[in-house]
Image 1 (cartoon, one colour):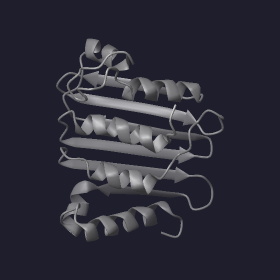
Image 2 (cartoon, rainbow, N blue to C red):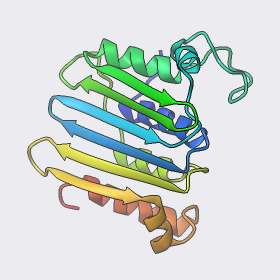
Image 3 (cartoon, helix red, strand yellow):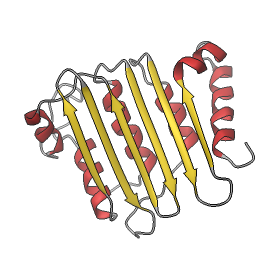
Image 4 (cartoon, one colour):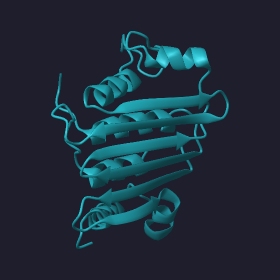
Length: 184
């Protein structure tokens, strides 16, 4: 198994939403000393109960999104990682309405991957093509420097213009890093 972080899992599942035709993707990340939890909600194409069952199966892929891939590992890998780390995962989806994915991880479990780089992950997510709005809500309650913040893609575009411009990318990265650090 390769190296990965909780941020890698969050980004992968968020990319699924961005690719599912969602106009609105909302991601909430809550972290304490004991738990890392994220909830992703989108208004994309959603899944029938049968499609959701297939999405949970690591040996099934639609062959469309990743034509060379023989298995689909995003959701199954998330479920397995959450459960092995003393956490869990729930997925609710309704065809034509969207999907809600929640996963939680015990931060004191030896099998829980490291959190990773939240600001870099956030910057990547905010650059996903497709959704007109991506909202990131972050709550960090680990003692020193507790903080809550919200970032909206539309507000960043309004303030910075083209988010893929080098200067905008740099400013967005600094902003996200300052929101994440206690002296920010």
